[in-house]
Image: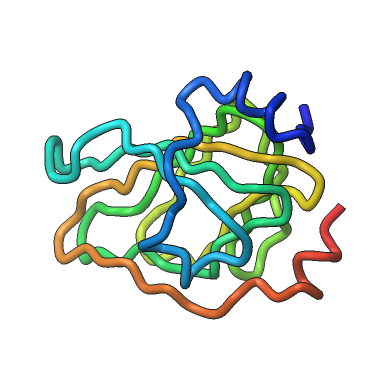
Length: 145
């Protein structure tokens, strides 16, 4: 279900919006919010609820690892998009689970007319790191229906 009204969205966002995602703001178009659900490093899988305002999306990025690694997204509220490089975008709704292997270039974020939240888990791997890349420009994003 789409939510353009923030108050209505906050009522269904079961893991909470959290605080402004200041540390990662350079890698997002629009405002996002981060609510950690586990402590960083305890366990090594960091789990957080990420909330995107309507139209917010992160840049293309890659979770690198020489073994293991990647990311898992579990959509919890609102509607959004996920796209791998060279593939069609995938619509995200509550209950959608996306498994992203290491070394796959991708982005994810809200639809332009809905708040959106997902739980994000970075899967530990050997020699793991994140590489932030170019923005998902307005032309690419605006063409999504």
